[in-house]
Length: 325
Image (cartoon, rainbow, N blue to C red; front, side, top):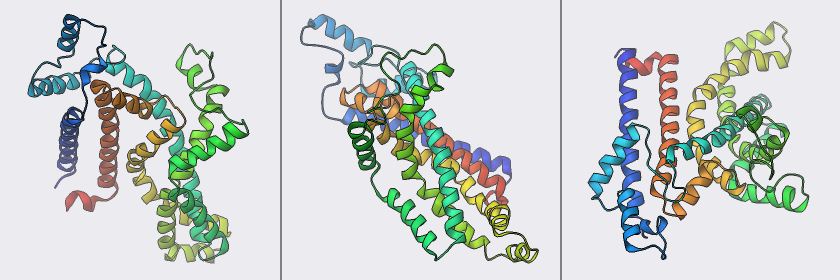
């Protein structure tokens, strides 16, 4: 099988996965108990006004007609009108997605850097007290539910000691005129610090264990003994030779890690009242806002599918055996 055929097949599989996801989401939200009409109407409305609202949101049409309209609209970038906000879902999702992506990117950089460093040192000091302490540190936070860790961090550092804000993305009254002022200021960084620390401590276990396992394999290779025989310092052997070759599995798994990390990030957003996709999804499901909930899930699903597709391309490029098998 050629590389072009392999990449085309993976892209087709990704499109099929996206279609299945959209179908499941469409059916799932309509199978939930409750009346979605209550989200767009009130008891004070007349029967005629309620009927007009139902027709506006196409809730009176058969499910298959709604499904076709939902699928066509999604392909055009039209995710519908939010029941609660009375605004296009695409604009709401895009605004919340920027906050989530900023959090994801920072958490990825911090957790991967910290996890890689822990994995390298732990493998190099295998069996020592340092190795045991680092593994206990990484696995301890990985085993603790991120919801519990976030609540404890809020209680100690926000409610008890008043070191960090209790939630949100910026202080009340703070105004930004452009993208740079919105995300690159001390007030935003002050709000960002605690969610990033809690998330990074939870996610660093994955790259730490992956790097440690790869390091243990590399340390038995002949070129490591040759580097030591040349008289190089242990730090140089550890980072320039062993860690440099052990980083490949962690790098190729980075795309998968980004998609997998979305689940934990959404929980962190809810705990810290971070105005991202996770918080918006909770509100949308609570208000039975079908279009908004679907839009949030589709956007997250699209990012995860894209991350896995990138990982497949990287695997195929780095290991030709996957392409030609």
